[in-house]
Amino acid sequence: MKNFHFFDDFDFLSDGEIDLKISGKYLGDEEMLPFYYYDIFLGDRFVGRISMRIGNNFHSYYNGNIGYEIEESFRGRNYALKACKLVLPIAKAHGMNELFLTCDENNIPSYKTIEKLGGELLEIVLPHKNYFAYRENMKKQRIYKLYI
Image (cartoon, rainbow, N blue to C red):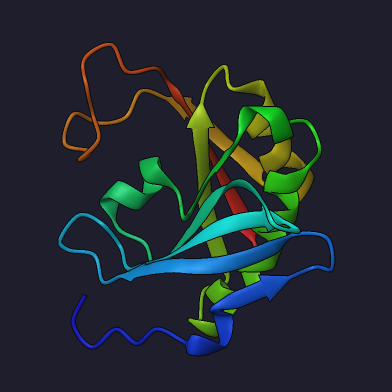
């Protein structure tokens, strides 16, 4: 994305329990939006990763603006929810008032996280074949909108 500017104020985020440490900033391309990429820590223990994608395009409807993954041994403790809350101010700083959040149709922990965050289910749909991450036998995706 031409002329995109990352804010350095968001290189370290914390809620007092978990810390997000920037591990990369990517400008994106015609398909991928610019995004901030973080490692999630609980003290000195690595918990997972989260990305905050800025803007919207055809692909972001299926890919979502936030992506996260939590290490198996740390799941079930709301670390994804806490990390999502920490990255929301980034979207606001970039002028975003709404985000798309997505997950596989049957990914119960992920869609419960999205719903706890306040996401409103728009539809459950198989991504369009022109979506950059489309693959054969892809599962339907739950598409949510979150107003921030």
